[in-house]
Amino acid sequence: GIQVEQSPPDLILQEGANSTLRCNFSDSVNNLQWFHQNPWGQLINLFYIPSGTKQNGRLSATTVATERYSLLYISSSQTTDSGVYFCPSGAGSYQLTFGKGTKLSVIP
Amino acid sequence: DAGVIQSPRHEVTEMGQEVTLRCKPISGHNSLFWYRQTMMRGLELLIYFNNNVPIDDSGMPEDRFSAKMPNASFSTLKIQPSEPRDSAVYFCASSLWGADAEAFFGQGTRLTVV
Image 1: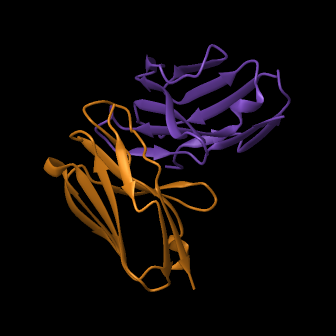
Image 2 (image 1 turned 120 degrees about the vertical axis):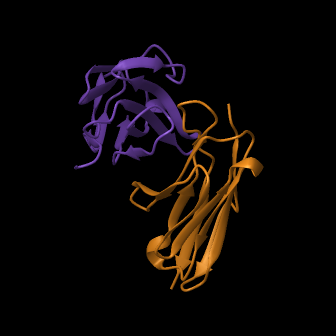
């Protein structure tokens, strides 16, 4: 199946800083989502973005399907952004394959 | 819609006991997924249903695990007998159609087998 590599694995930010999280895929993807798993364990949908660019407030995401990667931009980070970010995807299959995630800690 | 609803939120059971986890998908969604999350293995797919029919259960760890979807609004994941290594957070997710659509996750069931 598809392999999902996320970077960086860990990230510590001062509140107000910007960051970019990256996902690389071993195969072409036809569905891709970004999730935020908060400290309480909830998986919160951020974007459904198999291709193109989307923005939602301080967050935006870009997927370049032909080059097999996706980026999540977080601007003006807040402590509530802390948690683990995932970018599961599927390559022609139903299965959303998860990577190990990026653990983000935003400190005041 | 209330989203994907899972119950119970927490379950503590003794080794050897039967455990049943429950899931109500989002109304109108025709695909349902059971995932398990552990520190060692991360999030892994256990089984997938489409239109109430199990499509692929290759992720189910062993015969002690079984899943059913008797109708479009309800699914169960059963472990019998349970073992300490089954301790994990179990998530249910649903989507509108197949995999090429946005999936939504329930809040998960934290299972502890002692």
